[in-house]
Image (cartoon, rainbow, N blue to C red; front, side, top):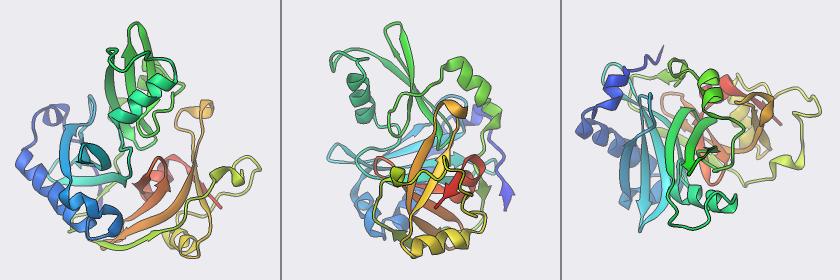
Length: 273
């Protein structure tokens, strides 16, 4: 294993060799769709688009009959290969246009469906993923998954997340195959507030302990503050996906099921019982 070295901006801005990228996406789809939550991906229409300015990544949106059913994030590697980032299933994908429009209307930023607006994607890591939306003279930032308004502006974002500071995890030079999927029932993450009562975080560096807690059908929470103390994400962890090479992705109940590599989560937040 070795840390990812980001491809140059010029590489990301050019088409990277679409046939190779599409082949890799099809391979991951074939592996994942053997499992029930991803089965609909077998007949879905995948659409690949660049994931925001200054990134070295792509967003793959899966739609069926015009509706979102899932997504995956793909990162470029300097040797010309690709790495699977986060992925998920459910009616609202990452950077869902439908969810974005709903949120803009609900928050009074759009008065009618056909009112013009512009939206730019920004992606640093799963909990620093945002829409930068301009409606007339007004500009707001919204979470890329929930479309909740974020307490940041463009200047703050650049200070907190310099483009060169993107951390995408580890490269594993072998074929990925799903080895075990576990999904528990969703729960209300705010039933308990261990991060406020100064309870010790769950010892998550030992991945086997995370898996065992979920195997025992016990609650697990993930808490992160990517923008400092102005906003806190508390998310129920309801399962995991373990791969043949040892990679572990945690399943989070967040407008659908969102699978995020545990290494990425450990860098940016804490787990609690």
